[in-house]
Image 1: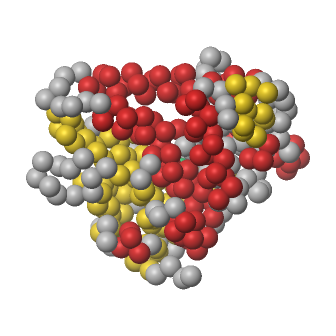
Image 2: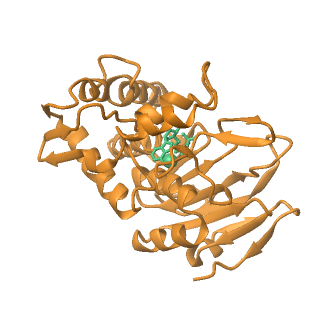
Length: 303
Ligand code: ADP
Ligand code: MG
């Protein structure tokens, strides 16, 4: 939300654009959204807009490339747990197995704009929505001739930088310490240059603790339970918002080694924080990251 511009009302315009995405495209609570319509049509062929079909194609590719760690069909699993919602609870094993049967990214098939999803399957694009929002804002900014540079921050976990700061220096984005006692205790700072996208996924965003166990909102699609890869937070930097957002979620599920391999195939940079207060940096991230929290140490990723 730092805009270098001579234009007015741009913030309002961007706000409207985001509401349009939220309500018209991605929301599963809003009956009129395209995702709700797709969910309602599970079991039948449906035609999607060019926009949605394009996103779904990228999303399916990311699901496949991550070996299913990122899975857009966890709708029922996510609603069953309702982490961060009014009905959050630990479901029974039988309930989890029941909803898992209706999940799995292979249940979606795309043929141009024609989409088929198996009956019972339910989409949830929560792990990619803010990234898509950033991509759409970029399109919008490119058409604003009086904006030379901008920093957009969607809910803290998705950040986009656009263009260069007037003084030519890097954009510095703070990364949250996943176990911070105060919200303004940062793990460190990541430098972004020009137009780049950063996304963070962590087990501290939405969670509850019961009997000493943390139940958080990033699910392992292979178990139907919150992912337990030893990681507490992952931050990814890459060229598109959708990729940054989906990759950070996938890497949280995959953990350090497998996550780092996935990032390599996308030419993305990443940092992983684990429960023992280690911070693991990919090669490209080493040049971007400065550690601030002295209870953490930087370690090499074992390949
Ligand atoms: P945040 O929304 O906090 O920025 P993420 O981008 O990691 O974090 O997205 C988490 C959201 O994605 C969850 O709230 C849920 O809606 C959905 N989700 C949870 N686990 C997965 C997963 N393994 N693959 C795809 N989506 C997921
Ligand atoms: Mg994500």
